Image (cartoon, rainbow over all chains, first blue to last red; front, side):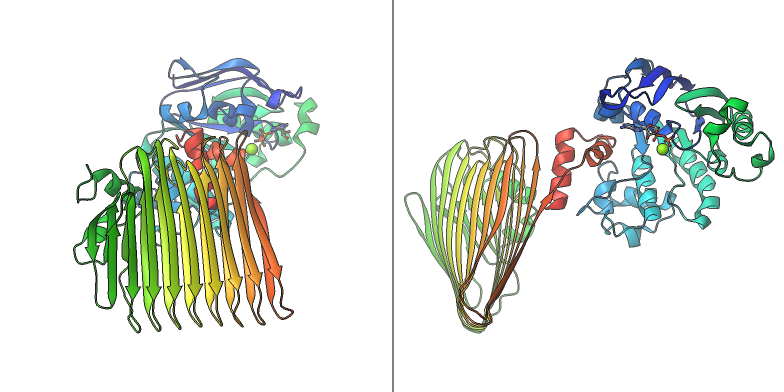
Length: 252
Length: 315
Ligand SMILES: Nc1ncnc2c1ncn2[C@@H]1O[C@H](COP(=O)(O)OP(=O)(O)O)[C@@H](O)[C@H]1O
Ligand SMILES: [Mg+2]
């Protein structure tokens, strides 16, 4: 077992607001796992707890990584153990070039160029550009994924990897993820509210209103997700339309 | 005790602050290199005269660029001291004639300073229609044990340009107190950029850069970047006084502060005595956000390393 998230409850910053309750799921080595659920269901919060962000340390439960209890380890310690996260909305760094950002972990320019290629960015064009708000959302997102991949992580968490990427990029994403998987051999946790994005996953966990309500094979979970969303199978083929999941919960 | 070579610690610290050491040590490149009070490297070029006199505690010197001489490669200056204690006094005079051009890359290195004082009393006199670029990078070691007191007076002649870059962003600071007075004559241009970063409660920086726009249509820009973490203190004043018609100045200050007990202030001070002069200013506060820190730590940096990287970026 690579990762075991055991019964965690998150109350950010000691507020009395519980944003996830008793979340349990696990991942094996080299597994691609999708954490699926509608917006606001608590997916990012789970990723933050696994990464070790202070505000999201579990109020209850345990996180075990490669047999070690890391529930209260620092972000840096976890990163050094091979856990990393490509953020849903990456921050901009004023005055730091993409090369400098990548070279926190990449050994040199050549290695940085290699990871940029994996996310389909031309190193000649990008390495010396600033990692600030002169980059578009999609470009920044690609750089973020590249920086996470450069770590050669054991567990790579990609939070909404398609958010901010343009339409043409959608088809590109699954082949990009496949290449990343091949190159790094990492276990990947794909966090998404879209079926297409989770497409390369073997397994999935379905989050609903702060809880993981089902884990299993990706296809099965996807079926369940769509049924919950619409009460019919149609959205297995078409993207799920935006509807109020909460309102439907009772009827499931 | 002080031999006539540049000690290895000093060469290393030059690398730390980004100086191309091969270029500095190249026998052909113009230079004045000091090891405490000994001149360990001196090289003149055509139209550039460098003369130094060794004193008990330091060196007094003249660096002279003749009229019409344009020196392409940077002139390296190195004021280094390796012992942990003592006093070094440097009294340099820079004289640049008319229609001349020169750039200096100075490196002040006190890598082992524990109870060490460096004093500098510099004077720069620039003639007509000339250009002087002066960059000074400091490295004060890891112990916050240096006390550094440079004082500069600069006269920028008619239609001449003076550019100064000062940075103290690597290693610790110790105590630094810099005073720079710059007088701009008719149509002279002055550009000053000063950056300092205090990293702990023994680091205390005070910098006062003052430009006096005395000549008609003279211009100046002062850019100051002050950062402090973990209890460091960095205080900067960017002063611009416009005393002649058509004189224009701008002061741009940015402060970045992080951690308990850290104090920064980068303050523009502006005085205009002539009705046809104008000085503008801006001040901003840069911040290190938790998300920026979390992002860099998720790549394996420690919190201190992450703060450092972000601050250097903002500066
Ligand atoms: N630091 C926080 N303080 C209070 N509420 C939060 C905090 N972080 C997230 N939440 C709330 O928790 C819920 C889950 O958020 P999130 O994990 O971002 O969901 P998802 O990633 O699935 O869209 C949302 O209602 C969100 O507003
Ligand atoms: Mg999210």
